[in-house]
Length: 219
Image (cartoon, rainbow, N blue to C red; front, top):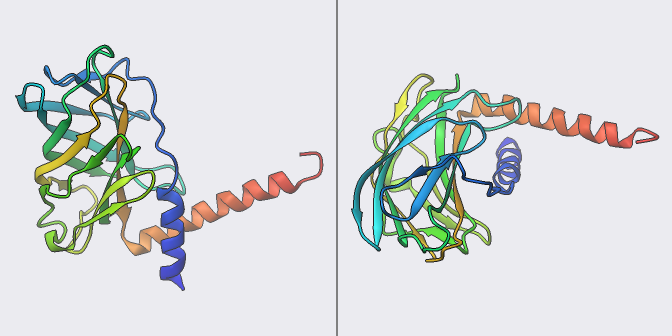
């Protein structure tokens, strides 16, 4: 019963729309035609590793995931958009490595990457992405929905609170060439089941309170 409830709640959380907003303060990714920015107050940095003009840009990403608000999963969202809306950017972005600091106060049992909208950009399943030793490389799952392209990592020992997660290799995002292209890369850390119970309980409480307020006369 708990597994079913957990799965239902995770689907509800992951189904929330990934909004595309202004990227005025974004970092320009070399001469690739792309710029990127951390959304929702998150912090981090981008480093251009290499470029193939007109074809691809390879980058590394460093970021910190902080303690989430009650009822929410630890997450970070990165927005990508053209550096010049008169010129289409390179059709491929390759992430060569990530450094993810776990400052959430929670141990993670799963980690998920989501590209949205999937009609504009998607993961290339030929990516050679290693999540070992934190997660099991053989358990990586590629998923595609009507709105997102996703990669799920699980198994293994996970990422402890205060630990650093450094996946590496080549996580490829193929985008539709367009001067108006904009998409988001959202990453979600899923806490261990014991901590997830508390998060789901907080979420259920918040939903109940919201429903009670709407049910009051005069509302």
